[in-house]
Image 1 (cartoon, helix red, strand yellow):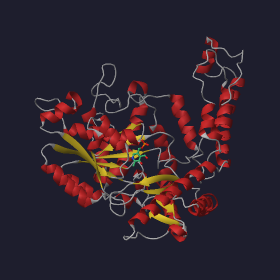
Image 2 (cartoon, helix red, strand yellow):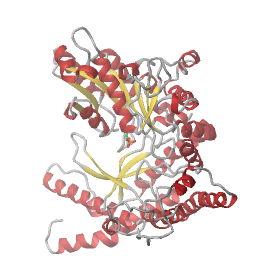
Image 3 (cartoon, protein in one colour):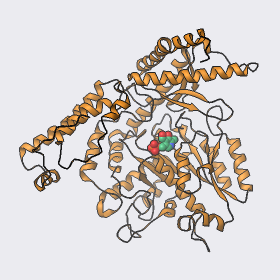
Image 4 (cartoon, helix red, strand yellow):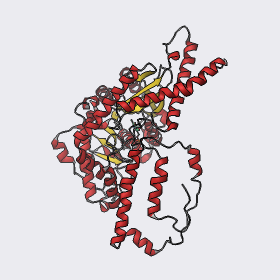
Length: 551
Ligand SMILES: Cc1ncc(COP(=O)(O)O)c(C=O)c1O
């Protein structure tokens, strides 16, 4: 960003502070502030709508060179008007237009326009739901929003919700920063419930994991999750003192769902081992890479049989419960012990909003903390059973969005995503230059570009050739994805699928969640990938071959 010239009239004094903190003192300054809001609401929005492209073709290094000053100016250097204009004109074009219908690569997308208004209200009120003394009605409002999502997931009866919705001793769930912290919270509760206080040991939370394990003659805990589990699970294991190597990846079947036979075998092995205890089994409702949903009902019954905490990571897929047409895909989630769900994913909330829910309203007692000045026992303070302390009142955004959209509105988005993904899969299969790698179960699919000359199935007689072919395909797909991203017109992400028994496969990954993404746009994205291969990659491959170089 350009350095602004120092403006002598900008001073940091008490008069300016008074103006900054309080309402504008006259009609004129009121109009000026309203104009700023207009600029934010419409200037930025218009920009995002007009720019169907993803980002400008300026290398990050060039941008980084513009942000090298580490000094905080002593005197103010910019006025609010300059800042707003600068962000809209200089930052926005170099940021990523995740609102574009051509942006189909990540779990971040366009959000409804009204989210800007709701977020503004949250900021203006600046409530802190850690305690009622800084939030009052917002705390009880939050409990209601949590109950609504809890009911969406667990579908318990009316009496249950009537009892627990506002009962200070009950906790149906908690807002956290994101899915990572939601998973961490669920596993924190699972760990403490597995290693509670007993005579001679005050439990893992108080005495530490080493003492709690030793006291029970245990050497380790383990967490079982499919090999497609999100890396936040490993982070949680690290933070909770279990060590991330204790996360045991369970292989997936051909549909990328947890292999139940291996899960059962592993549970039995651990059950026989007196030194190991399984802390949790995690079923995923929408894996990050392929969108697959694990067989939740069967995992649930195995967990019941072995007495293990059953957590469902529905950070991505959770809101599918809002769709009458597709809610069955998440069958089994209602019997989980805990569930992670992200508001900033398929609830289309602005960054960032995570939630964790527990079937048992007493489960979060395992992580209750009190302080002398707040969070006193028996109070409604939401900070008592919460990993985070101070935080914003995002429940106002989610609660309002649920009212504005209704389950029906969200269902339209969910249905569109799933059906567009199916359409995209059909198109990929139809095109000779592409291969569908993982079919969409929800609204994520993976595929790769396979040029005619590199088609062919594995030849057991020539494993070396096959290896070369796969390596070349991986390289080509890395290049296609990178070149498309750098061109900035559209965006599909890339990952390497690492599944046991199968070679590492570089794939292009599409996440269909923008309701403006249609068949025409998807075709344009595939056309662009084909053109990149034909015009920019194939010629270099031919040249290498002619020169006798292995690619
Ligand atoms: C299945 C799953 N779990 C957890 C997470 C972590 O969510 P967040 O990025 O909000 O921390 C993700 C993010 O992509 C996810 O896909």
